[in-house]
Image (cartoon, rainbow, N blue to C red):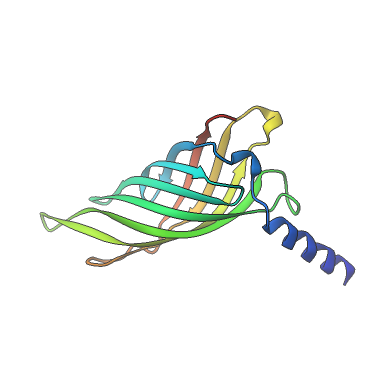
Length: 155
C-alpha cells in the first residue's frame, strides 16, 4: 500500500513538469514512418509545445500543425524520459485515380519522448508516436506510427 501511494505521488508530481531544458529551444529533425518527412517542434514552456510536420506517403503530401502537452516521467524512469498527447489539423493533396484532390482534416498525437541528458552534451531528442488523421473528404489514416529524431538548438 505504501509503495503504491509513493509511486502515485511521484507520478502526480512528475506529470506537472516536463523537460525544462527544452524551453525556448527549437528542435528540427526527421520523421521516419507515416508520414515520412520533416518535423520541427518549439516549446513555449516546460510542458507546452507546437509541432509542424511536412510529410509524404502513398501519393499523399500533408502539412500538419499540432499542439502538444508534455509530461515528465523522469521521477519514475530515467532522466529525460516523458510522454505527450495533443491534437491539431492538416491540409495537403492526395492523388487518387489520376486526379489530385485537396485534403484537410484533424489529427491527434500521443507518444513517448526521450531527451538525452545535458551532461552527455548530445542535443538529440527521440520520440515514438501514434498520429491518427481523420480527413474531411477522403479515407482517414488511423494507423500512422513514426519515430522522430530531432536536433535541439541552443542546448
